[in-house]
Image (cartoon, rainbow, N blue to C red):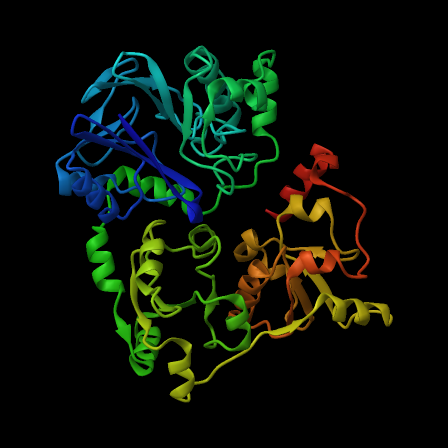
Length: 484
């Protein structure tokens, strides 16, 4: 028996490769298929099953492409209607893989088709569960993504989740290994651990949602509280996973195309293409193409693309670090953005060499900002672009909370004539915010270098909350409602 967790940090997502006696299964694959095909070839194994734990919302799975290329069967749990051929299992059904057995445990709650796959070893002993978004390490899946108007509320789904955990998962032996679909950083839960697997017994002791004496009412209240609205691309990715999508090969063929500055500029005009600059924020601040949007490839790239670019069909041209062009196109496709038209050959240096127009984003250090504030007042306002919970935990006195997550719906609250000093935690999100505002005609912007990490060490006056856990839940809920 071979089990390999394939973890992708950008999406905080885990896929799994399981093999026995020359037969293999892959659980929750990412969009790109070649790494799985390469692994099958190295192992000399035949892919028999592609298991999906649910209709993923935070990424486009590779199940459709992978099935076409290997002949493997796509497997979903009950209540999983799709536009492509697949095997829809029944609760309790068993499927053989070499000398191993997978038992289907229908565990609705995160979504109604959510399914956990119980793996039994060669001796028929319960060995591991692949829980998808039903059970994470330290948390459970959010219950608000599959709400249906007039039919299901997040409280209804939380109730289903409570029953699934208590009736299907918690009765299993403590030694059973828990393999979830996500780890810390995913928007599919609230309090996930940085660990990516654990034993069920340890989770029973440490995961708040598995507390033995927890009533259903307490569970529903706790898992439903403090949920930020899901990113706008979640529902669109879930639809792609149900309906199917373009081959990743055609996406790469169309998108990994070198463009000289003139052709690059022509495509922006003729196709109304978005210029997406994925270099480091330090490079972007020093010079960028006017109107371009910064989302750096080195950080949480795909989730921020999904949160901020509202049209999956948006034509995109790239300014990327040399050698990372194909990676960028792939990572865009992971969240459903398949319409990349090419990249700037030679990067931003070629744009400058061609004498094309460029812009910059002003910046200031935290110590310089502190000195300006000490003189008797700023000539503008500090704007904190972190999430409401981050802002409530500690912030600059007098700062406004304007979370990056909601910039597209809240931009009208900002005044184009006012000057804004933007900061986040470390300098990534504030530059994204600055680029978006610049592209929309806001010119009086200054980025605070290194964000809160530098502010915390400066003399800038700060609030006195020491950590998020000291904030009353009703205050958190009110802050989320105010900015969402």
